[in-house]
Image 1 (cartoon, rainbow over the protein chains, first blue to last red):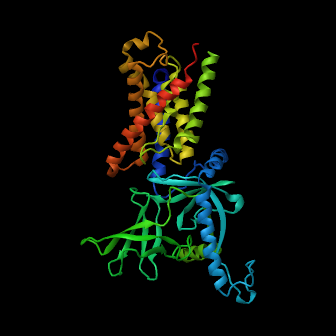
Image 2 (cartoon, each protein chain N blue to C red):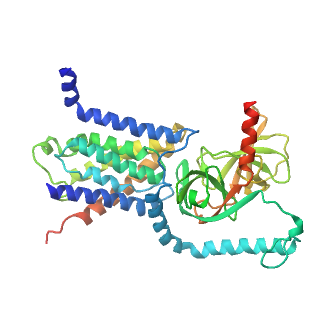
Image 3 (cartoon, chains in turn red, cyan):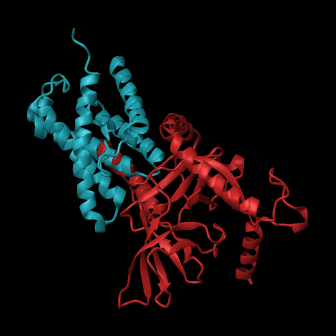
Length: 276
Length: 168
């Protein structure tokens, strides 16, 4: 017993090093593994408010650019609305006789910390559980898909970016039913890869890639990017397609969070089906 | 003694703050991000309790990990640097550092440059291997380590020059 105590006290620094190393390596390996919910992220009150204050300063530097994007988007949306027969007047009252049911609710918010140089990129945004944000909600902006909500605290949330080697998003070629999966190879922040599209599909450079609408996260036809290069290999029956993103992921400010209104119902149904 | 504690707590907060608010937003050539917060470990008093140093190095790294959403990458690299710091001191200053308490920031000497570059290379190598965590990207790991080492070293000397007490 005495010897053990002597050994411990003699090597206490080394032991402390090993214990701390075990903790930090565990945390590191956990971040790199696929299926996990992170315990410690920047979605907490302290880092969130610091990022928010830094962002308030940073925001002024490209206010004009962000304003232009929003104004352009507004113009497009108004054009659609005024030319459709959905609204009654210019204050956007929907015609009651149409009985339109919303599948998705949208919330507007801002990205307060961006990251795009790593292999596993996460964004931090303002707004959390108090605003009704939950894990696995879709995040988009005027130009297309941004990512998926990963962790939520009271007032902040982290988003797993589309530029994250762990992200997988169902996608398809616009106006066809050829579905595939969007992944990121970690190399270039302007390009993602579309895999699992069968070679039967007719593809052309410049075709638009949009979300597939199979998951409960994104509705159908949200833009992602355009086909840049198509790779084929004899060993497989599927294309690997390099897709140029519509979004400049290095410069993102205003985003929308999408909430699937029927999510609970769908999940409940799926659970019941599995249990039977 | 109290003065040392105060100076080190101030450095801990200052370096963490500067790293989060300023240096994390600098991306040179799309690769290099300066990480001069490790000056806290490099400049930690020479003859002090090593266990406390290990714990604070770990905490500093972990705080940055939380802000970075990177799990324990900073924490691991900082911990290694803190544990092996004495070896780097020995390599650059010779055995004499153990007998004489050297004020390492006294003047920018050849020894100081060697010591800082060694520490930065060591920290950055571990950091980028763990951050990228995929040996398919070995070239990128090397590129990021080299470019970031350069830029971190430069910022380290700038910070040392700023922190040096005025002798006038």
